[in-house]
Each structure stands twice: as structure tokens, then as C-alpha cells.
Image 1 (tube, rainbow, N blue to C red):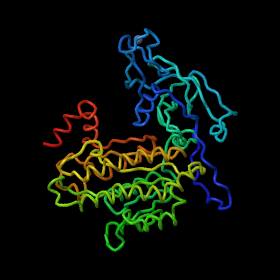
Image 2 (cartoon, rainbow, N blue to C red; image 1 turned 120 degrees about the vertical axis):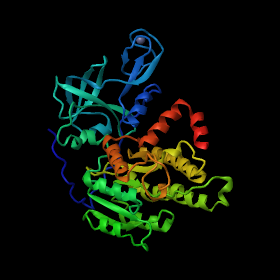
Image 3 (cartoon, rainbow, N blue to C red; image 1 turned 90 degrees about the vertical axis):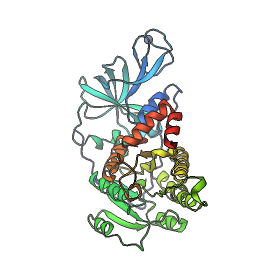
Image 4 (cartoon, rainbow, N blue to C red; image 1 turned 30 degrees about the vertical axis):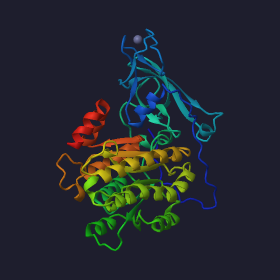
Length: 414
Ligand SMILES: [Zn+2]
């Protein structure tokens, strides 16, 4: 059984911070089918459309009948752990710093055998389930996990390398005063976060619910943070930038309005100021520190979470400027992912459907409760995914965009 993770000690300020290293990252274009599945937390392998054989490792032609018609499909993740070994030596710098490392061979019920990282709670000769996870290079790797969850299994150092579990980590919620921000903070505390910094964008405004929440747990710290103000962002980064392990950007600006009838660009400017330039200010102020601390012990800097709308992928003409700002934020976030990825810090994009809050008051259901959205975000961090779709609206739009994006465009415009 995994040892429970211990609360990390206060860091010795004189000790040198370990610089981040990354596991080997080269993959073929075909193998990125695994990356796509891992990024969304699914287990998919290539299946031959002619003979039905499941393939692993990824390939161009079916290993059984040489057909070219291989499709990525969800397959059964169960299997038998045939053999294991513990690596005590490695020529690779990343693994050398993390030895000993357990690996093994799993024979999948679906057919093929695969070499995987093996969780310490898996017994040789026993049943396991395989999971596709992204490693610190952002590449898909196989983890053999216990068939059923075991106590503290998420605390195992090997699994923690591929996930971003909030346990004992310090979290900054950029807008901790909105309904979603408070819910995210609450979920982080429930998941064992060490400290949650609650960004307050409007210190001049009293909100009794916020004050009561902030006083409800000693791990909560209110910090002034206005993402539209460079000074405010830089001041906060100077004060707590070296401590943030997970940043959740909940700051957002949502107003209705089309393109032609918007009467000027003021609202559009406000939306971009918060949703796009706000993200950029945060990245410039907090990004360097987080990258530097990507290998800093148990509570290393692990993840950057951007809360976006599913309309980042499909414009809603009734909210034209807002949709455009969401699309711009998504584009920026993908570039940020490449930059943070050089150190191994994960950028998770959350695509949410309409949330049950004051700005979506007139939006018809289904809507997501802030608590459900927050729970999904924590779940996504624990699983280590990088694209998370939350709510029925987001899930349906994602599928329909894949099937026929023109139909979606016409229907959203109607
Ligand atoms: Zn075949």
C-alpha cells in the first residue's frame, strides 16, 4: 500500500532549487494518437477496421492483416501484469533523479502487450488497469494502476509525476470572489491543498459571503489581484510568486452583444482586457517563477489552469466580443502551454458550458453549478489531463463540432 504523502517541510532558503529536467520526448506522428487520448483522459488504441485486431505500439499497418485502416478507438483497459523490474540506474537525467523506478509488462485483455510504468500497489501476476497519462514532457505514457483504487494511491511519487494533485500544493485562484472562484477554492481545500490564495479583484467592495468564506479556513489567504492592472499583478507576483504551485485563472468578463449593434468597442475592449490581456499579464508575472520551480520537491509548481468557455471553439453571435475574447484566450493558452511545457508545468484548459451564476441568469438550462465545475477541475488535475470539457452543453458541442462544424455554426447563429 502506498505511503501517505507527508506535508513538505518549510524550504531551506539557502538550498539550491533543483532545475527541472524532462523525460525523453521524441514521438512519431502516428503515436500522437495516444497523446490526444491522454490529454482528455481516455484510453484509446488503434483498432483494425478489417480484422478487429487491437494494435500496440502505434503503427501504420495492421500487425495481423497489413490493412491500412487503423482507427483510434476506446478499448478495454484491463490486463495482467506479467513481469516487473525496478530500475536502479538510468542514463537519462530525468529518470536518474527519480530512481528507483518500477516498470513492467502488461498483457492487455484486448490483445497486445505493453511496457508501462508500474504503480507500487500492483502485484506481479495480478490484474491491473492501464491508463494513458501525459508525462512531464507532455507525451503519452502508459501507467499500470491497481484494478481498484487503493488508499493513498495518488500519493505514489511515480504517479504524482504524471498528475497535478492539489494535495499539499499552494494554489492561487485569480478571482476568488466570484461564485466559481469560491467553489474552486473550496474544492482545493477539500483535496488537501496546503494554502489557497484568494484573489480579490475589488477590495473596495464588501461581499459578506466572500468575507465569511475567507474566514472559514486558516489555509485561505485573501490577496488583492486585478488582472486588468499590470501593477497589481506584478505586486502580487513579487510577494507570493515563488510559492504558487497551481494557478487557476477564474477571472472572466462576460457581456451580451453582437458585432454591428454593439455601439462602439468599449465592451469588447473590457472583455479582452480581462480574458486575454489579463491572462498575458498573469503569465508574464507568474510564469517565470513557476517554470523555475517545476522540479522543486513534493510540492513543485505543477499546473496552470485556464477557465474558458466551450464558445472559445464555436462563436456565439449573441455574445460576439466575448466569444472572440475566449477564442483569443484559448490561442494564447496553447502558446503558453508550449512555453510552460519546456519546464514540465502543465497547462490545463477547461471548456465549460454555461455556469449557474449571475451573468448566466437568463441562459436556459442545462447549466453547471459552480461546485460541480470546481469538482471537475480538481478531478482533471488529479488525473493529469490537459483538456477538460465540463457540462452537458460543452460535451455535446465538442462532439457536434467533430461531426459537422458548419451545422453548429448555423444553429448558434439562428
Ligand atoms: Zn487487421
